[in-house]
Structures are given as C-alpha cells and as structure tokens.
Amino acid sequence: MKTLDIKSKRVKLQLWDTAGQERYKDIVSSYFRHAHGFMLVYDITDMESFEDLNSWLNKISEKAPEDVYKILVGNKCDMEKDRKVTFQQGEEFAKEHKMFFFETSAKDSINVQEAFATMTIEITKDMKEIIKENDENGLKKKSEEYKKSIDEKEEELKKNKILTEDLYKKLIDEKEEELKKNKILIEELLKKNGELINENEQLNKINKQLNKELEKFKNEKI
Image (cartoon, rainbow, N blue to C red):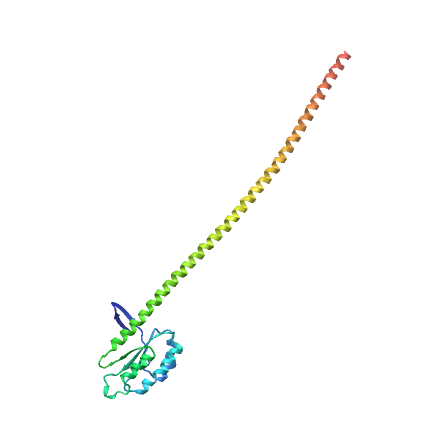
C-alpha cells in the first residue's frame, strides 16, 4: 500500500510488484482485469529487461481492461556508467505505446514520487470521468424507471377507472331492472287488490239484496 497527497486529496494505492520475473506472469495476469493502471519498470543497465516490455504489454492487452493507464519507468538512472538502454530508446518506446516516461533512481530518490504522482493523477482523472458518466447514466436510468413507474400507475388507474365505471353501470342496470320488476309486481298487486275490492262490493250488493228479500218474506208470513 502507498498513500499519496494529490491536489489536497489523500489517495491510497494498492500496488502489486512482480519484480518482472517470468514465473510470476501467469499468476499476476489474474489480477490484470481489475487493475486501474500499470507501471512498467525496466532496468537501464539490463537490455533484456527492456526487451521484455513487449511481452508484458501483450499480457496487459489480453487480460486488462481496454485503454487502461500505463506508464514506463527506466530505473537505476544513478548507474549511468553501466547504462545499456539509452534515454532516447525508453522515450521512443513510451511514445510508440502512448505512455508517460520517467527515468528514476530508487537509490537516490530521483523521479520516484513524480512517477507515482503522475500515474495517480491520470488514473483518478479517468475514474472521475467514469464516476461522472456512471452518475449521469444512473440518473438517466432512475429517471426512466420513474417515468416507467408513473406510466404503469397511470395505466393501472385507467384500468381501475374503466372497471369502476363498468361496475357502477352494471350496478345501476341491476338496480333499474330490480325497480322495473318491483314496479310490475306492485302494479299487478294493485290490479288484484282492485279486483278484490270490486268483488267485495258486488258481494255487499248481493248481501243487501238478499237481506231485503229475506225481510220481505218475513213480513208476508206475518
């Protein structure tokens, strides 16, 4: 772990150092897909370490995210008398592969902090863009989800309104039909009641007539 202060912000880096050894290549490639950046370091006193950079770049291209940040570092620049890789060779290689380039000395603390700071600034700058894009996409997605939810609610309300109107109309129709039937029953009952009244009046007339005749008969007998 390494902590840097970048533009008044504290940034904590998690670093994996493979020492460039061949036996580590297959092991560390499993970590490539989650990496945000790569610092490719070669020894300026060892041409083989410089020539091996292409192999590491191929691994990065195969396993790491597309357009992942890379920086090239030529270490041991304090050992100028033993130099095998020129500054121009390192610089041209970096330009060819679109990388920042530093020559450093861990022994004399030359450009070490600068290399890490440059890599961190570039990575965090890309991450800010990603976060911003994700936030925008997240807001857009939430907006679309909210609109979809509103549309679904409106459709549900529309269906409920139709169902309510249909149910209300059905109830009204049923009530009207029931009232119609009740009206017919009342009219029939009133008609029958009228007929009974007429019959009762007829019976009263007959009864009165019979009473008169009975009275007359009694008088004649006397």
